[in-house]
Image (cartoon, rainbow, N blue to C red; front, top):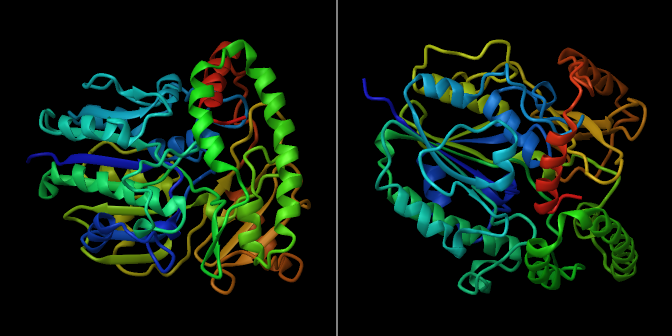
Length: 453
């Protein structure tokens, strides 16, 4: 029996609410078409708010802290952990794709058949990458697995003049979504959907600093200056000056925070919009609101019904086992956190699952991180080290924007969420492995190039 080809599109920083639903981006006709012809999982949670941990969850079926790609040193993935690619290779798959440069450093991805796989972080579809990708689909050796990670929405955003128009949306995020949607359409035109399994998701979500208030755009960031200068500075900044660059970054962040506080004082913004416009990349107090971890997940495959929307919670760690079941692989992961989503398409499940979530740390400073639990109905997170500190609990059915913290009035639910955390045996240091300093430095330097501090 002919094996299906596999297309995996990971859209960096794409939030679920901008992909599907009442708040979705204004002009995404190709995504809308694919949603109507596939199965869309409305409650998908990423394992973290950062790219490396997001990749780890997607491609191993494990929560990131188990993989080595965790907060304990930005190590490579543990060699003994099988990845989706290891198992697809045993099933005869050929690998193609395009990924940001840091992907080459972490030991997660396979050997690719095409050239120039790893691109500079300042390259996006409109820079020629889109045309290069589209042209490659004419010469793929079957069965193939194509992995594409789009960085178009990652800071610093570069928006082409073609899409910088109000008809594509009032805010920059929506206009970039229109650009991404255009290229998704170009890619889909090149493949046979009857012979291909298509998975579209995101590594994590993001804050959106621009919000609409009384139909007017509120933007407290000097984003146009930052977006135009960051690519130029990032390409020429010497590695030995990274520490100086980081000190300057955090100093400027403090100044910008004070300025934004003054500018927002006369605006009557709801709390969820206020945290969006006030958010800064150098924040030391980390949280896990849905804008960070609620991601889209769309699957087009003959085993999945068309135009089906699933409202029960699923997780990014479920993607790899799902792909393996789609291709009837006889090789399955052992002792993983994920499960195949083919079991979820038989309508609603009687028991609600849960997804574990954790922060990705910043590089240069010790941040106040949180861990938590996401279910279909509730969101819970608290301090990573002390379960009594910074406790947040939200009823997502009644409070979709997470504005009303009910942790003090529902200690029973807090206890239940802590039992979930105990169930997965979370540890900050998942084993006795001491991170390789040279290895960690290489990964950290690549992350700095990506804009992480």
